[in-house]
Amino acid sequence: KKGLSAIINHLLDRKVVSDDGSDSDSDSDEDAAKDPAIPFDFLLNNKLLRMSVEAAARREGLSLEQAVEIQYFPAREAPEGEGESESLPDWISAMSSTSDILCTGNCDGSIRLFRNSDGFNQIDVSKSHSGPIKCISSCALPDGDDSTMIASGSMDQTLLTNVYGKGGSLSLHAVYSGGHTSSINCARLLNDSGNITMASGDFEGGICVWNVPSLDGEGEQVEPSGKRRKGAAAKVKVDVKEVSPSYHFKAHSGNVSGIAWGFGSSKTLLTSSWDHSIKSWDVETQNNILTLNGAKVSTCLGRCHNSDVVATGHPDCTVRLWDLRSNSKNEGNVFDGTLRPSHKSWISAVEWSPVDPFVLASASHDGTVKVWDIRSSIPLHTVKAHSKGAKALCLSFANDAIYSGGSDCVVKRFKF
Image (cartoon, rainbow, N blue to C red; front, side):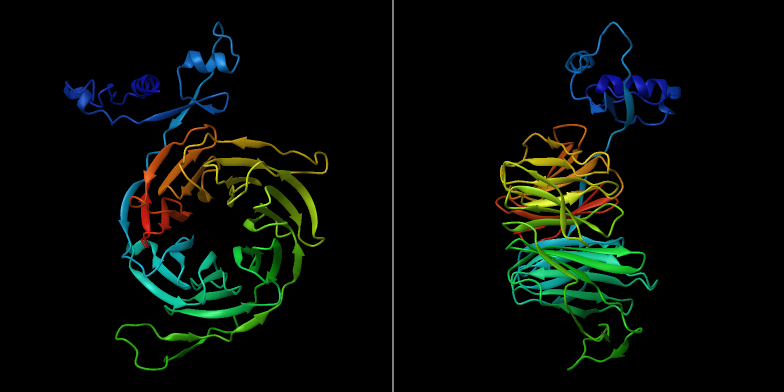
C-alpha cells in the first residue's frame, strides 16, 4: 500500500513519503516546493487492498500474466479526539444528531442537547422520562425556523416527542400511547415531504407506526414557574397532544433491537431482533416482505443512507451486513456478509456514514469505536473512545465527526 501510494504521489508530482514517514525527496528547493504527499487506498475487484498485489490477485483468481486493474482514491484519515462534554449525572444510553444539534438520552431519563458548532456546551436539558432512555431519534422540522423534533423511548414504556425551537428551549410536543406495553427500545423518525412519521419497537417484539402531529402555530413565549436564571431562554408554550398508533403489529418473538425506514420509502420498515432475524415489512399491509435468519442475537441495526443494505451488531463481537433490497423480479436478493470480529465485547451500536455508502462505525462494550469500509473485512481505524473499563453504549455518525457516549457519563467527539 505504501509503495503504491509513493508511485501515485510521484506521478502526481507530489512529495513522496519514505517508509520511515519522512519526505524522501525534500533536499532540493524544487522538491521542497511540491505539494505534500497524500495517503491512498486501493481497490482490486472492488475490495480494499490489504496485502501485496500478487497475493490479492491470486486470491481473486486473476492471471498475473495480464494487466491487473487497480483503482485508487484518497484514504480516509483516522478520526481524532476533539473535545468532550463535562461529566453528566448518569450513563449516556442513546444518541442522535442533526446538522446542528446533538441529542443524548441518559439513564436518568433526561434528554440533553449540545450545539455541534460550540464544542460540548450544553444548550438545554429536559427530564422527560421516569426510567432510562433506550432510544432517541431526531430530525429537522420543515417549517424553516431551524426547529428540531426529538423522539425518545424509555424503559418506563413511554414514547414522547419534544421540540427544540429557535427560542432556545426544549418543549414537550406529544405523548404516544395505546401501543406498547413494555420497554421501548428503538424508534426512528422520518420526514417525508413535510409529513413526519415515527416507527417504534418494544421488548416484546411489537412495532407501532405513528403519525406525528404538526406544530400548531409558532408557540407563545411564557415565563416558567419560579425565577428564571439570568440568560436562560423562556419556555415555548406548546399544546401537548396524545397520539394513538396508526399501525400496531407483532413483528418478532423477542426484543426489537433496531428499526429503520426503507430507503426512499415511508411504506417499508427494516427491523432486527433478539430472535436472530432481520426482517423487511410493508407498513400498510403489515406483511413480512423478507426474513433472514442469522445464528446470533442482533443487538443493533443501521441502514446505509442510499440503499436498503443494513449492518447489525452482535454479542459475538461481529458486525454483519445484510442486503434487504428486493423487487418484483427477485424476491430473495439477500446476502449475509460478515466483517471479521475485531471488537472484544458486545457490540452496542452501528451507524453508517451519512455521506459515504461504504463506511460505517461500530461501538462496543470494550470501550472502543471502530470505523469500517465494507469493502474490507478488517476495520480502517480503531479509537479508544472511553476510559478503561467503561462501555461505549451509543454513537452518532455526523458528516465530519463521530460522537460516542457510554458508562463513563461523557460525550466524546472524534473529528475526521
